Length: 184
Image 1: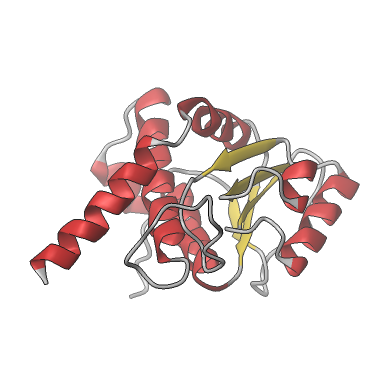
Image 2 (image 1 turned 90 degrees about the vertical axis):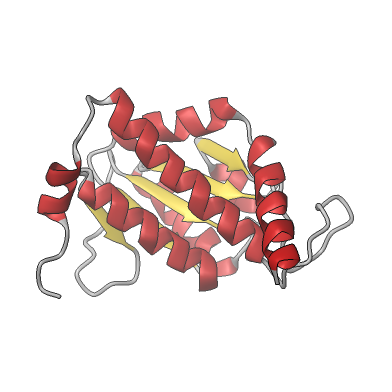
């Protein structure tokens, strides 16, 4: 078991080392200059989006998860962040088209910078990880399906939160905790 844990950890470290810092900083800048942030993904990528949305909320952002019953309409001045390994998920392509139609910014976290969504995006962060497709250019992994992408996206977006905390004036634990759910 220890060997498997070490292998997974090494795989994720290698993927994260290959992400372009300037892409992540650009994503940070897009998010921090938006009126509101909307986040969507499907499957596990959608769950990673919810995790990131929670952290953005803890940091004081006005954030919504697409598909929730209380999510308002997206508008000009907002940003839609999509998380999609392929960058071609049909429902997310439709969300991207709507964001462009209303003048919202569009950001994508993906493995595929030549995807349909990437072509429409203002900002693309490429995570060079394996997906469920197992295309020849993807790195090898012992993990099933898109786990390598999802785990890398989670850690990358958590790092973006830390970057935001440091660049926007260090927020302390108590400030973030004050926004944490208290109906638990």
